[in-house]
Length: 207
Ligand code: PCA
Image 1 (cartoon, rainbow, N blue to C red):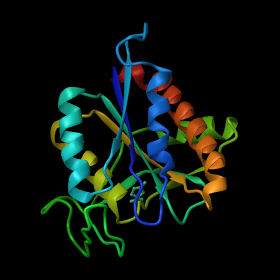
Image 2: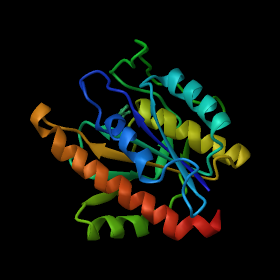
Image 3: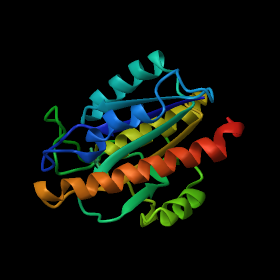
Image 4: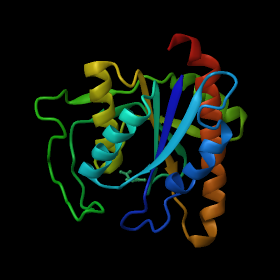
């Protein structure tokens, strides 16, 4: 089984993005193609761009045909870890992406469903996270910026071609200040470890 984990580059107002910073660590946990249990893990940092993240993901999925994709990003207004159930077919943010593109009321996929859902079994993972001391909540609103765009694109692709077979997205909290970065990284690190271990131990045989 192949698992691809993604984070995002820094963006307007977030000069260091913990989701991107953690990606270099994640791959070390179960190095690509060397794991005796037969699964491999790859990580990538995506551009915080509506179009750019799609282009990068298409290339990544060709090179590494992942069964599971776990997307991560940060959410500026949230203090807890949010497990995103749903992506909405709408780009709508005051903030410009890293390519300078602003979108208002723009459909992500013309003619696509109004919203789509990921298919990781979050309820188990919330309880695993709680045991590891991480307070996580379910969310049905991934915002209307690049994370939601990316998640909708992934869910849409899964519905169309069943590849990747399973997708999910986690929003991590963001640091208040430079000094706060280590605290947030620790939350993100534990979250990713628990979620990945949960995926591997619970869902492996169903893929
Ligand atoms: N958070 C932004 C985009 C990149 C990231 O980490 C968002 O929530 O859309």
